[in-house]
Image (cartoon, rainbow, N blue to C red):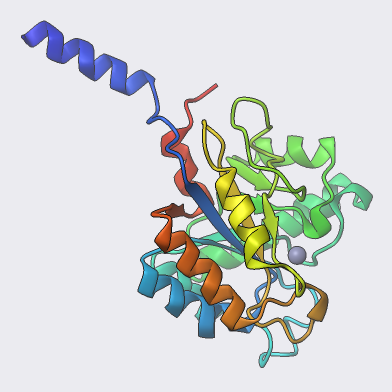
Length: 241
Ligand SMILES: [Zn+2]
């Protein structure tokens, strides 16, 4: 009996939990004020996890009506949500010099530390553009996950964890049917990573999601019995390579 117990402990320490079907990651880009005012309270009602990818790009510094304050970002962390890094200036990483990118990544890390938020483990590529140099830099800085663009489920056996794809990208003309199709891909070891911007997003109408539509998406996740997590929570399902 003792030996069996030891063997079981050994096995569980070597293998991560299997990826369940209907595993969904929610991500929100660009530090939009509606994420603090509307999205977070709604997700709390549903008991869903999520990652908010923070940048000081766009009009973050001057327009505090449409962009979150760091106090609001701090409150998201206090509420149990993940704060991820979306770079200081929201520049495309492929066009940046390594030292520029490093400085923009480090800046958000330092802001997090300043506000009592853990150094981010998750990253999101501005404009979804990746580069080999950026992947290398993120790896060296200890990042575990980085989301790019795309339109397919994340397959941990094939995709790079530092350039993983999104299954859904919330746009004004996105439909509940499209969202359901993305959710349905979360099976057989694959995970559906969902991207949103503001709900609503008044400053970037081309990535706007209307609150009523967003609510129908969240209700679908609940009705389907999905496991809805932040990006960092993927760690427990993925064995170290
Ligand atoms: Zn962005």
